[in-house]
Amino acid sequence: MEERVERHVLLRLIKALNEEEELQTIAQIISADPVLTAKVLKFVNSAYFNLRRTISSVEDAIAYLGYKKLKEVAFAVLVSSLLTEKSKEEIEGVLTFAYLMKLTAKRHLPELSEEAFMVGVLYPVYTESPEEVVKILKEAGVSKTVIEGLTEEKSPLGILRNFALKLLPYCIKLNRGEIEDIPVKTTKFKKTFLTKVCLDATYEAEKIVKLL
Image 1 (spheres, rainbow, N blue to C red):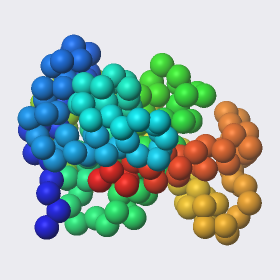
Image 2 (image 1 turned 180 degrees about the vertical axis):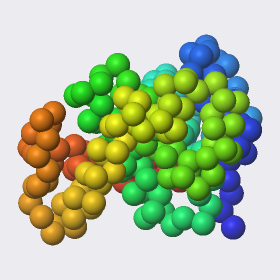
Image 3 (image 1 turned 45 degrees about the vertical axis):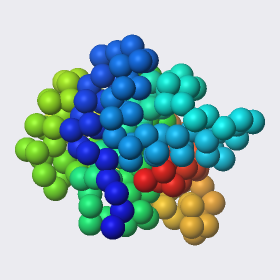
């Protein structure tokens, strides 16, 4: 049976990252869980970064990754621990959706791109256990913007979420080679941009899922 990161450790980590605690504090939280420590070091030393040297220190890993990328990893691990019955392929689909949210937000709502990723990665869990997820997010000190993105259809991130949900099936077909570009027309995004977003989102998701 695959070892899993303790959920309370992930919640502490997400809260500390949201509050931009000092590097040493973040390192202490990660180091408290051997499984999480191994996952972070595995990720930073993966082909994703193509480093010339091996990073063996948690503090060095955090310094290299930065808070934003580390937060993405933490949320991905949290979601995989909540979606215990999902395969890695299904988790990859969740992460692809999250990166679709983030990358389209960078063009349309740049100030909310990090929150958009959180909404995207948490939405599949939220649809299964809405009350539990909202409780977890409040415990982790996640912003009201993220919670509204999950719970309110007409919030800025709720609207973006619905758009990304419509885009996701086309991205899946694109990455299977079934279509050559995205046949979606909107007043906000060009098809060439959406095609690139799909490819980039899938690439990012594939890299993260190897960590899980």
